[in-house]
Image 1 (cartoon, rainbow, N blue to C red):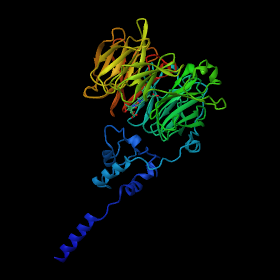
Image 2: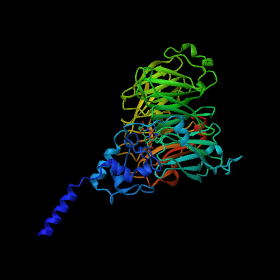
Image 3: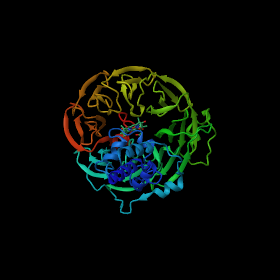
Length: 510
Ligand code: DHE
């Protein structure tokens, strides 16, 4: 009887004993890899800015079961399911304090590859202008493909969770790749070696390279800043804190280069402003300085002077015409768009773009005697085609669901658009550029997400991602639309052809 009482009280004690709080569980189990401040280390940052967008396996199941093909172990043996739930909830809380991430911190994160050896000419014999990269998000690698034979020249590791298009140096030799945790990696395609990497932000959006290849602009969410790096050695040239004209801090929606203007153009996410950051030698001589109505004077002693344009609405995503005079922006509400003329710094037209257009994926092509721009929508099963001379909608092409990416090529008569969301995520539509009709709907793997297309240099082949862990890049004949070959890959996302990117092919996004 006494033994039973003792056992029961031990059980009661066990049940009522305070469990370690989630913070303590973090320190004991996660901190070593994910950093004392949850900002990453060997593993990625564990903050809402990155976790909020986790698709597929959710945070609880990753903590419980681990992540295949990574160093993330399963914690189901160590933590109870209640503790795992609490830990996941803790990780989704914003950081109480964002540590400073200025020039000194960024520079101290820089790691140059000591084994890197530059070469005079490529160590391979492929066409350097037809090299195509495939980002494999399944295990955080990039495959370097010969665009003629589709042989893999190299497969190198990237920082965790690459996002946005890698940016090539103007001659196509170097490529810069950014991860959501703000790491920027420089890789030499001739030598097939990493040159180095640096953490330019704590949570970043995308990167842009100046047309002369000297500067790389990194748009950050966290902290609210734009980091400008020298492409040569990845050193910091400037860290610009981002605050609207009235002092409101803001994240950056995205940054792109505007080559004829010798500037980076960025939109602010939390303030209705577009910024133009000049890197050319003397911006006022560009012929539009006299007409800057909305902004303060340029400080010529600043190597990266900034022009701030107030816009009628917030810009979440945007696109340029081929002259880079006009910015077509999607508003935050996702219900419309606006055209901002960068020369006069004012809105000149409204766009009829309901259903959250994904303008970052927009493309243009000649249609009759005008140029049209087309964009998929993240919330509508449609592609909108807009006449760029009148800014009027020419057609809304109904698709089998909302899409993410579009691509074409000057030499192809087709536009390819995916259906990324919903039950038809396994289809890819092919649209005739002339008739604006869907002429074929491909379903390469029943039930598998199929997304993102890139063309070879000559436009003869289209590369499509089967966006699954056990996925593939499928190569199609771009004329007959027949499958030619399948290259197995780990959740391939974007593909990027050197020539199409460095020549700003009208069929590709920026
Ligand atoms: Fe992207 C490009 C924004 C979610 C994969 N994405 C871009 C660009 C922007 C953007 C502004 C253009 C940058 C560039 O290339 O320089 N993306 C956003 C979002 O706001 C959104 C909807 C929410 C978010 O989480 O940030 C978003 N994007 C995603 C994804 O969930 C995708 C599908 C998977 C992933 O890896 O995160 C994704 N985005 C991509 C890819 C590109 C991209 C592959 C480059 C496309 C290209 O062809 O250039």
